Image (tube, rainbow, N blue to C red):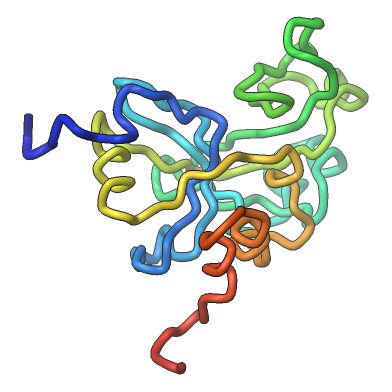
Length: 197
């Protein structure tokens, strides 16, 4: 069992569509103060994108036609440390699951879905809201995410559609924590550098 205990509270449940919010103990520079949307989570592992790491690169300068469809800031976001040369699009599509999805868009969870960046942008122009482009992603091998959750590296919370398109991504970590109930909301006030307290 590779040192894993059978009593994992997170084992066996898919957390696809939920957010991982880095706890103050997570100091890895790729993930410190990050908010990660889980796009896929099953026995094979997990895959997600960091929602609050904008880069200075304008979307229009790297993906023809997509720049005018993305929200503000209209930049590429660093989705994680894996496959930084690949692009991934996320967007919100209005409508209920099962009511016919826009061509070139695949539902991940709720109103949030993946955009086929090979599709002509004009096909999706009127169908999607809150489009955001990510370079790279975050990945976990089988059992790795569960171990990180058990060790207290992440808070696991529900996602809201507006999280993927926050106009102030640098404030997303605090905003997501602030809306939680109970003691978790208090972590939103945690100082950036606890040694300065």
